[in-house]
Image 1 (cartoon, rainbow, N blue to C red):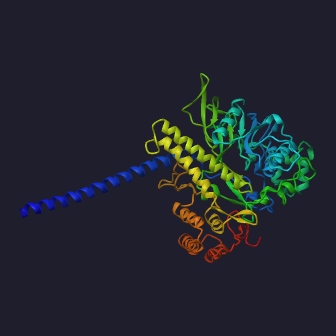
Image 2 (spheres, rainbow, N blue to C red; image 1 turned 180 degrees about the vertical axis):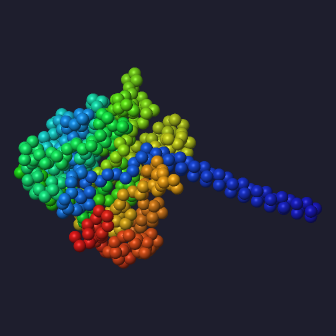
Image 3 (cartoon, rainbow, N blue to C red; image 1 turned 30 degrees about the vertical axis):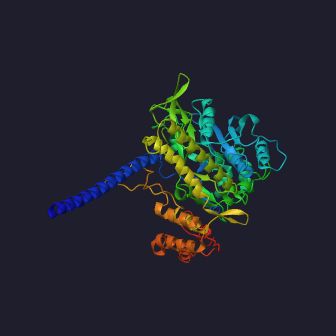
Length: 562
């Protein structure tokens, strides 16, 4: 009897151990399965942008606030006219009606960049009003009138969503000729193009001042380069042997359907979300001087250039700065129409029996990507953040309902649908996290001290490119988990935990832990000594500290003595 009891106990122990091992094995399998699903979604997340390398900075002097430099030839120019390939350019923009000051700068910029507003399309989210009163919507309508944008180019809508925006731009593109090119910026995005593509010098950047020509003289001659005494100005922007690199050139070695761009966010010198000071009214005597390089210049108002979107916010900072209406074949022939699938991605389509059918051929990106200025951090950003967050929440909920109608959920959906839902959820979290970055200061929102330091230390340089392998070959994935330039997940979580904490004592401990663990001065040997001293002395005591970027040395930044 005793032997039988011992045998039962032994068998029970073995069964218990086997049960534990089985459970651990199942947990390991589930963990590996989840990790594989995460890798698949991650590949799908990065894949559309994997060929985005280091962008070309055309507005370097202006971007980094170095207005004093001279003896530099211009690199940023308008879109060309009367050049081989005879490209025609059109503009489409979907915008809110609450930023009349920014709109005035926007219209000045793209007018100087060679856009004909008579054939452009502006879709305004708001109510159609007559000018003459004081609301933002009425001032917006007046700005369009001042810049002579015809009513035929304006469309007014009462709602916004990413789907509506995509449908609107595709409807506009459907009416354009196949050989046309589309400029598709948001209101806060300012694109510029290389001079070797054949365009004239952008007067609003005032590169002529760097050629020892004073601002007023440059302003007076930019509009009319036909005078013989200004032949040198034409020569500055003349086509070069590199013109064949232009995406529309008929003899390009490789077809290009669009030109990719990467955004660099502009921040005010005070680190506040400042109100945009509008330029003088157009066609006034001072139109290209104070408004564009002086105190009222938009670049001067927001002189810091940082990768906040891609680095701190973990969003993908890419846009098309120029999009062909057609997808081109290997021989340069126009074979399909290009259509937007989102604000950031396009595909090649052909109409079959009245419906657009996506083709296997993918839209080809131009070999050169361009950096552009992104003025997202203005006084209107708070309401825009809230509205966009709500829009993505609604889109995510609608997507889940569509999955449920197909008998699917987040766990059983195939990888492409999971990636789409992950993108929507990611966008929601991104806009939610953005609201933690600011605090109220003198009636305006301002970047919190810890956020200023993280931006200065981690987000003020280009993304790292992949390192060559042992054979010296650079991997083809130029944008991926290791080269996205995103703030490390652990560091970002620690920062967000600090920003989300209301208790001052806990916030002080979290701040000291964050900056001790991730930013010890000894590890930042390439950073400015001034910044290291400020960083070493950082304490979360509720007192605002002024981490002015103009006092931090480094590549592309102003000197400490400026």
